[in-house]
Image (cartoon, rainbow, N blue to C red; front, side):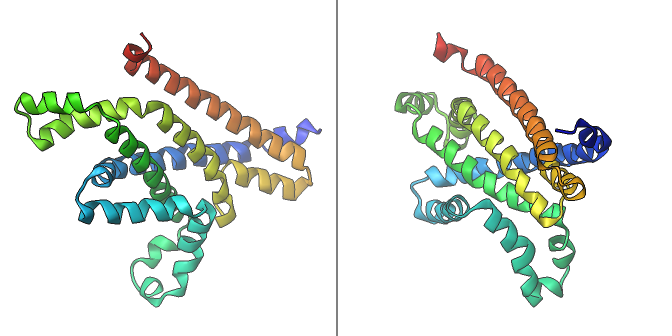
Length: 227
């Protein structure tokens, strides 16, 4: 293993690292705030709210993320309504397409995580809120969502890690993230061990940081359950 290959290309790996830590948090941010209303709709008994949301989550959870990225980046270019309108300025940009794909994908998974937490809420807490005179929106804002979000922390932590690892496929649409940097180094030096070992170490360090953050969140918001 030649460490000189790694040291000579540290700027490229740094560039890929910066792109990854920009792309993944942005996708998680948009996905999180899309999932909040979608999870409420998914848990609703109203079929006009429940079934469209179910179709959305079923598609994005039932198809591979790579297929979704290819459909947005390569597939939409076949339609004149995209290429001949202002939409083309968005969909020809690999970074924007990657962000859109990742945001929708994580929104679907996060919606199901939050929906499960909402449906597992003790009925007594809802009845107590009704007895206090809270309306549906007040119950949702002050009781249902806060409790559901706290209970979703462990599962959502796994989704954040999966999103980090899944982001590696964006290198296939010309985005130079961590994996993209490793692919370039490998193509230049034919050193797959040096290139992808370095990428693996970077992903491992990022995963370790994410696990640490969510451990602290669990201690802060779920300590009453442990006791």
